Image: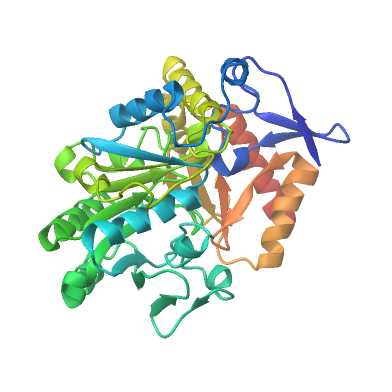
Length: 395
């Protein structure tokens, strides 16, 4: 049982369990701790807000909420964005689904194979993994018919622009939106290509469909830019998605989610059509503002962006034969180990923790995923790589 972090003036990268054993944390709350743990400036900002105002519901505007909305508009590629605040990535996905259906008056959303958009009922209609959907979603053929969500969801292969185009052409004016993860995280860390994203933008624009980018895991600076979309496509507003949503790393460790939408589009959500009690509360917003400030002050975007190139250098010097591929952007890294059974994946993560003091997750069935805090560098990446080499050699 994890108990505490090792104190560090720039945020802890190491954790201790209740027996005093130390672990290097390459999970970071599944990406929700970009500053590491207990960063003193982040803690101070949270403490200061706790002494002022904690929760008012979203019936009222607050200073931290307004300031955070402005900060996100400045840093994300959607022009004239309006922001809806919530508590989690799944809630942000739900907001995007409702907005797309309401704004267009259409009933179909195109999603992608391997996608993960959350586990609430609406988000499950977009999530691809059958083990998550099976108890709650009926799956006749290749079309998902959600029991509680009015969206009709069709799925095509990720990265296949031709398949997406064909689906858009076939379904015509039924398609409200195309939704995708800019980098598929749970599937095994698969970044979209620039050509794919630009192609989707043009296809959606030509047919009056919206384009939505889920950056719950890959947003908030994890790819070395505030938005993974910007890291891949750039900041041209003509190429930006219509909706973009994020969570995880935004709060630096406290729960917060945000759905950004083009201004005119956002007006489709009339008062009362969606809401949240705790979303955008002053404490979470103050934590997010402190996270943004620290990332920019300490040049952590550049440090996050350097992690993937650094690991490639390490891998070139010390190759591991069982590693089939390295994928990712910045501080979102997937190390594919080939096809390994679920039991072996579980044994691998356990061995890394118990024998080498390294915490990782396995996603997509056979990919070791690293979601380090942004200040992690060569020493931490090499420690994980060496531990992985030892475990694979012994297995």
